[in-house]
Length: 429
Image (cartoon, rainbow, N blue to C red):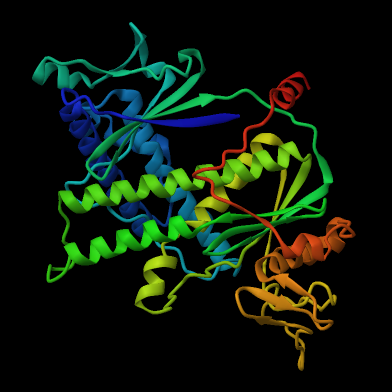
């Protein structure tokens, strides 16, 4: 199992080196993409990484980089064409809707990610040394640059380091081997998750507990960012960009990434603590495509990174052995759970189908018998019910008490730390 840690590089002395190698990586990617596209258009074949290395081994952009880093750059081009080939096969089988296109060129003058495998780097006085290409040493008399080693990582565990340019900043992304934790879990205990906006994640379990991850602060941060962008780009040509826009965009991206990591960690730690071995995540594909909810709502909702949060939860589930199940969530927010309403799939609603209850004021739902429940908790419970028969899930403890008063969690204030007893027990298994 591998983890990833990003470290901001703020040493002004090495920033020119980082900008140079990332620009050369960008140019090398475009060279490889050109060759791959020409081979595909003329012969219909997909280029391999061996062909790209053979073709560009004497290229000046290749020689400005460390040989192993340059090979990783060309490998990314080959992987892009291989992904295109697989998508084309899926499209011909009508497994996907959108027709794939060959990889496109990167923006001229841009910066690209560059990866250094473990064998290319070395540790010198608690600093990581990154070699440069022979042509750089011959032209400028410089053969390497140095980046501080994170104090919480061991160099022996490092597998790869990526130099990542983003919005005027550079990050060193350390990929390392993690310890494998095997917490004791029960697959019969499940957590259903209904994503939203104010209630970013509404979580209902079949062990008689429920909670909500609050999304109002995230929505506020997102709205502020969009207002700033609108103000700075007013009366400017399309594609306008400056240093101030890059700064506030980077700040917003860090806020979103921080919220995603905290929310995902809270959910997974909660599952480990309560021995929940399965997560059911309700998700409708392409649910934000061409969305238009008005100027104000679009500023708050459209760019909330719920899909990235889902991916992060899935990654952590794989790390800790929690089964992650994704299911479509059509009609889960309007069907009455307490009345056992049928839950049809999207596009398969029976003629004359109507829910037994209805939504009323302040996010509440009233069943046919007049019982009130939280609308989002109702949706999360119905998400579990969507797959309950296939997965043999017991729903006897998912009653009105679980659906009426969930605990609201602000992940910026509440941190779910696992007790040491559970961590020790996980390591010993």
